[in-house]
Length: 580
Image (cartoon, rainbow, N blue to C red; front, side):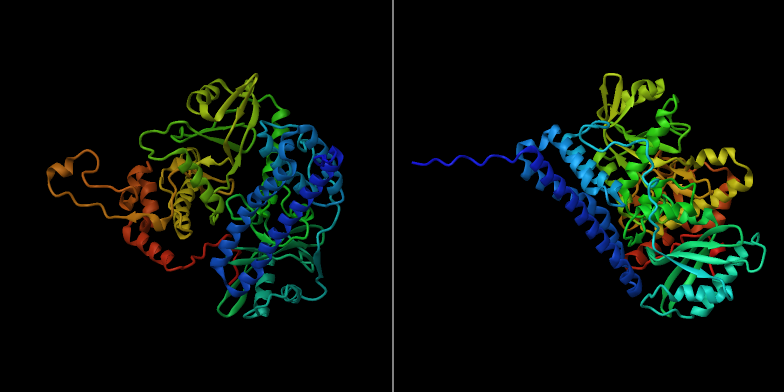
């Protein structure tokens, strides 16, 4: 009788090779699926398929976690009990690094690998034995590969140059009047760059071949050269009933920075490789952090990696204490910051004030809604981090006390360190209530007016902030008012906007609190101004400019349009840069 022995498991080198190859192919598959979704954007714009474009944006955001889950299941089946063997994973990491070394975007591949190992091992902090760790490098420093671009010389008139430029992008929709669009672009460039003296003012233009799409616009992105200097050049195109039209031109860095900012949804830009595009965009926006450029290009995980890398370098180079953030204490979140660094860290409290009728999962769901929603330039992007390790000594005493008292379920004490198991990280803004107290009158008035416009923009994107208190809004360095407190945020279409009932007798008139029934979704717009705490002069200014937001009919009109599928046009740039 012959007995067959069980097949021997492959040696570690063979197993590591198989896993590393699988991981390389898994990221390549993710990248191909990411690009397939992105490539639809051109067709969506040409056919004005705006609803489908929004669904594509959500699908692309969710794709990373989908591919990580697929890869995790495959590796668990392949490795069996050895899926938790760190020595094996160290060999896999080394071989994976060799396989991806020729790739231009290898940092994206490394982040994908780290995402998987952190989930397998539930890593707390950073583990050099099982992941790629390079906190002291800039991911784009070694990139010298030029991103594909188109070049134009101003051999004749600027109008002719810009007409040739518009013709070269080959959109399958004709311009309504391409000569007029080119002429207006030329006139706007001259107007916005008056300091460019000399003849000709424009010597050359260099444009990325890739068109950037977002919401209902297409953007041509590049730079414009004078005799001795250059500036960004972004041309925004819209698709109207009559055809294409150039809607705006941006040549000031502040305008382009806001367009690529943390309050906007991600671009759909079909880039063969990402790193070289990031390098080019940094020439336009040298003050823009690399993490924000990766993120706005839809590479949110890489954006998180670069944000952590940059913060860690700054944190390690100083002995500054983490402190509670300025502003009123939140009822749902504990918020802290490193004063010299432009971020805030937000941790969900264990218990909420009685007035907050929600659960921890409700708060997480609100942040997920914002992550996938059209942020309309009025909602700040929040990145979710888990298991970040900090030295205990770097927490100011009052912050440490608050975290251990009200956020205990999100804090692990590990020797001399604290591990924060779950938090959101956002760009720090100046709270609007503080900004109004400390700023000169003209900036205060401008901020109050923009606060009303922010509520309108949010409503047009189907977002109701829930809590309109000034402390829940912040002001950017450009003076733009942004909403950042999401625990009571909801969709406008889910609200029930009501008139305040009239009191029927003296008892109801004098009753403390509401004598009438108030449902969970009920909203009374005429009460908004009572809770803002604005001085009379500023309250009257707000009502004069945006009084409709305090009336029920205005909200009903917005709801009716949203329910009918209407798309509001929320301009992503200043009126001053629009054409015609």
